[in-house]
Length: 374
View 1 (tube, rainbow, N blue to C red):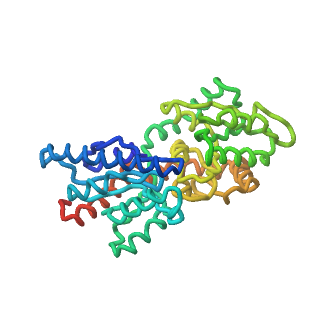
View 2: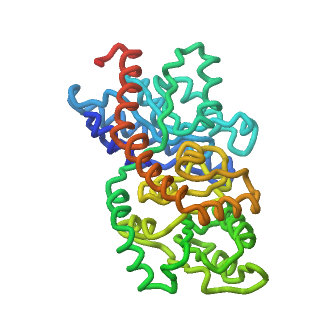
View 3: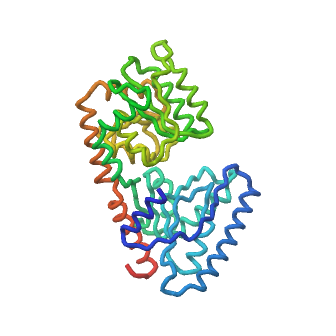
């Protein structure tokens, strides 16, 4: 998403420069490590400001743009530098959770709140995040136009192209694997790591135990520390009381260049989406013309239109999840309509060009609030 934001900003006519590769993430909740990271952030600020002091005025940044700050990864650079240079501070995908106050990441939580109070524009990728950030604007008595919805978006070009070559992609994948082209291919794409991703794989396995019949196969795409555990989950999958190892094909990590063809070869994208922020792989699948069955949680409705481009089901209900898959498997007309609608949705409503327009509107508000050029 960071790269896509740069692409959209560039398309919108802006010159984007990466100011720093400083990383503030601290995942263990260790206050001492957080303090050291904050100190390193202050040193990086000093370094950047010294650099800017030796920069020609016409080449100084006009806006500081930060992507994805939250309590585990606060922005130690942007707010300070924006104040020092007297330029607007803009953020994309901010996350603010009041329940984190007083916890192991209290300093990070507080820093996020202070940064967002300063932000001249905030772009939220999900309405879930908007609802959490909005009270900060209300408390500051600031104009609501500072807060904008920027739905997750995608450069769909390679995926749309792959969708037009679905038959060839399917034949190629069948030739390389134990997949039967006469069966329905389900595909799940996700990192194989502890936490929410592993929980999604567990929920998927549980749901598939309720999907009877021998006319479907599952493709998993992904790698990570839990790959052996994921493989073991599905290699012992019981459907109708029978072990069927050949029902599941594990592709492991797939090169990004090959992902469009891999997705296009499948029939249905399946992902329970435990704790999912929104899920870029679901957008990619739809761009290939593959409808989605996913859990209806958090930001997933931002990337899947229920009953139009896929089916969203209640979180962690394996029977409903299996029924949704079966509904698509057994209704060719509905699936065909969803294929077309999914590609149209991504192409027209989740494009880089659409995102560039939203970003330009937000940046204009930010510049206007600072008295700068439109």
